[in-house]
Image (tube, rainbow, N blue to C red; front, side):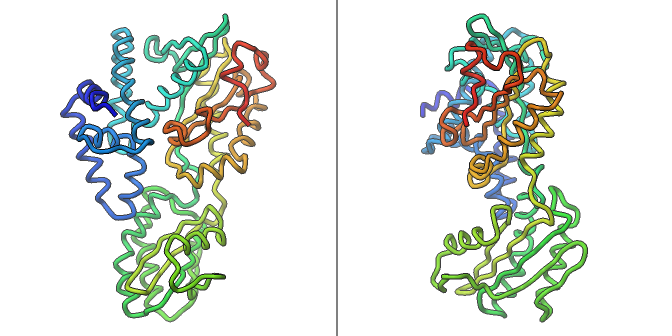
Length: 387
């Protein structure tokens, strides 16, 4: 990776702005062991840019994200003064607090995909402040593309962020408890009301678990939580099993929605498994988002494409959403709604598509067979369903 790409981006956004952002992310990553790992995943693009600036080796995924970011100053040079101001405003907003560059990179990724498919691209969202972001043209046909970002956390009963913060809080207590109670344990934690981001009840839940461990009870429950402590017994498990293998067995037993965290003390092991009282509804949340943005972001005068960036997902969850056709089912249901009248297709991409490790065509596409232009040969490369 040529470092000039990174230098061009950082010079464009401003060295002082970038240094402030790097310092904020570094502090965020260092908050706690588990929370830090989750934050590092969330800010992968920013970390890749900083690694590139420092001349450190990049993974293939990091290289792809840096290449996308390098397109920002290139695009800036092609825009009018008004378009340049809107682009800068979007990028600056992506460098504040918990925001990330991923939605910006998704817009560029979407434009690049359509350009590679033979479409001319107009960045009307920047140039003309249209509600949609891109206007694509091919063989006399045009389509509007509105890019939007959703976080899978909004469909989780137990948010990963809150779960990692809870485990960072309670890990010292588990270390102390294991020292006095050597062995291998599994604490099953069911949260009927879930555990949402910035949950105010984290301290109370922490105290609840700590108090529970000081008793000799095996189970405890109320309307907020159900706790059950058992010896860690898994079919085929051996005392010498590696942690990865143990967690894989537990995931097969508890399902993909469960959250796990392990604490080790010598040869002793304590694993917590948590889930909400209801199943995750990520795909249904995405469908609701589609119905909300279609009337607001598309004019209805041309075929419209909703391009959704699915953020904050890990590879296991993304694979599950794809393999179980969950996104497809909800997208196709949405396409029967009145709100989808102007939508000719819906597309999805996660960071795995942006790093070329996901869907081979760069996105998942679902065509609306009810749209008058659904069978347009000119629009086919952008709208034909991928599955």
